[in-house]
Length: 377
Image 1 (cartoon, rainbow, N blue to C red):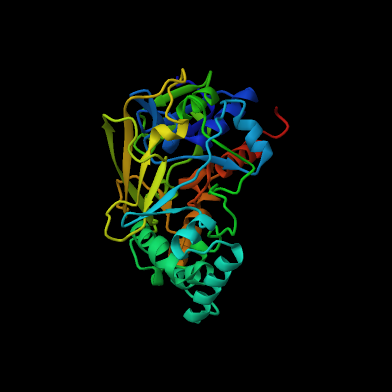
Image 2: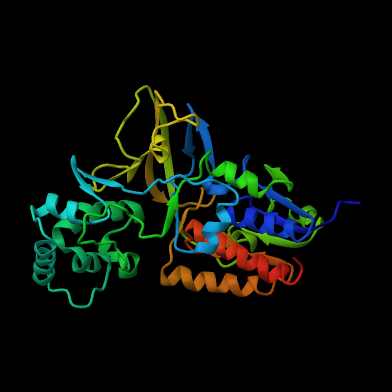
């Protein structure tokens, strides 16, 4: 007779690993599976030339939630990395987020009053009162010059459509600062796990059985028989056989290479904001840990990843949900089906069809675990 578990957790990413840890702490027998050959989902880091390479794109932990920050610090020590990306527009370099360094480079202004006046002048000239799309929203926030050089090309590459066809809400909270502050995330806590994210997830999954290269949807009958309940973090539409049609995503393709030099671009992230450059950004992974190895030695080589945003096709890796009205309505249909599944909990970025920052997915997993395990810990 097959071994019986109380929880089968589909996906060894952050949501699955946090839920698994909490269930094990509550004395539950847990099995974690993942179709990939590794744990940690999209936060997976692998060591190349002594550098922790973010295989699925840069992940910088940031949060204002002290409970989440205290929680992750139980499983990893975090360094002091602060996200300060640079924008490259045809070889002109600008600070991100938009701040006084950006405005000085763009217009030669020196004071916050001059910068604010320049933005207001361009906003007035554009005649936008109620922004109807992303282009109008961006111009109303930062003026035409910054929009044309630093927003338009990057955003159109990322979403694969003109800014005039994108909803305004995508950049409602575009960071604009009239200070010399290069910290992109306005968060109380920020950093990168020392030793990489994979090590952090390993610590979360300590003592828990994990099976890799195991596809739940291809072996559902046998796997369902192993457990009383399923925690599912895969795509919700795939779970239901795409019965209403596939939800849309944007995907990302990475070209990663090892370079025989100590320093390629001098920063962890450089965004290429012109439309002509085919990639959206280049990540130089060593700068997430200040160019040092575990012993604090300078690393002689470097690893870079060029990121190319692309339309998602079934079979490719889904990254960013396309949260427009059409997909929102489609997800609502799948969610209605999910609510009828008494033995399945849907969670995470794919299971809930929403973009989660890492702290949000951890908070969501903790909440789901608390509801499931209430009174049992």
